[in-house]
Length: 216
Length: 304
Image 1 (cartoon, each protein chain N blue to C red):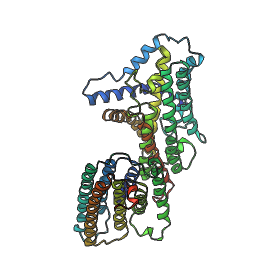
Image 2 (image 1 turned 135 degrees about the horizontal axis):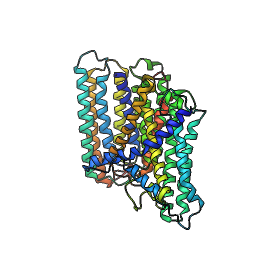
Image 3 (image 1 turned 30 degrees about the horizontal axis):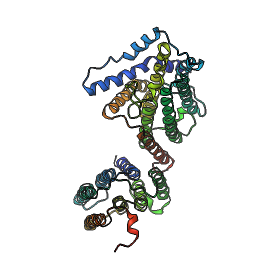
Image 4 (image 1 turned 90 degrees about the vertical axis):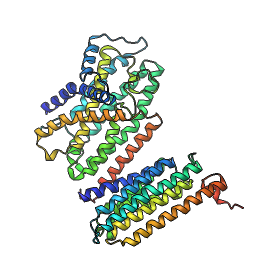
């Protein structure tokens, strides 16, 4: 049962990654990343290795759902409203092609995890490969999108991958480290949101191509 | 084998018009209406068969031959998806290709009979039908390929045998894209609205506009047999045969095929028809899900 649920959730995470790759609207991407946050908050309940009791299961879950599924999407939603960035900023690689690349990446990470010597250590090879795929897909989003907000979402996918990888490989993730990472993430998003507003005020756009030249 | 073929054909002929009635009843239920009777399509077919066919003077023999070809080739496709397990069924190497290309043959004649009338309006519908079915076909074959990978054979029987409750994740990843393909192939709502007539966006109904009488009845009947066939395949994907006795399996199938119709009716009630530009995207995402299932079936993680 637990095993099946783990497979289902890692599959949904992969599908949400592909959805993020395929959606052109930043609002749709926000919904996707919030859904991923909810999925992540279920994960701690499914790994039976937490020996230090219920607190170390519930705290990461609650933190993940409040920060990743509610707070960060809310901040990003606010900044999208302010900078009004729905106008299309074409990515360097088109949406269908990047979904296909994402699919191949997911398949490749399944193959890769099979070959890794430590794969049998992790409880579920499925979650580990979903995490690997998320790392690469996060990088793909960061590197192919021109829109700064889409790049922030790519960074969040990357961070989520770290969470999944940590929880599925290490049997004991100290609680304080997890809380620290979450707070760092929140602070990072704060800074990014402020930076995006500043960029918008300065350049009147959130595309990155204008950042390439220095501004007086 | 003869018994099984006869049973498949008889079931398809007799039960298939029921599905359209169930879908309409479900939609009526969601809309708070009473709706037309479940047997409405039987009455319509009966009425149409008694009427004479009017054939346009500009149409050639293709237009007259098409309804019979469409009907027979759709009916012939049903024999590969047997109704009752246990009985020997027609099965040979790569018979799934014949199954889907019999449907392709019927689609081809539907398209050229629409073009044969010389109406530009029907030509538009034919063009859309050709485009969308070309997008739906790869998805179908990838889902079949996934099932064959698990079944280890090359016939559609082997494909259904390969699915077991252990590979439930593959079952989901094949059933969902196949359901989307079913909606596209049978001109159901996110792709085409079966209720609209003389609207510029419709696909299937527009190609039947010039048919009347028995010809129209054959076309409608063929469409409902196609819906029956796709629903049956979905039920076969979802119901693992190995844990049930043949009698229980047959009974469950008879119950589950109308359930697919109810689900279709629910989808039609909660969704609006997607704009024509969105249709390729929908089929593309179905293809992505199907490919994910295929890649998972290549993997050794779950020990299949």
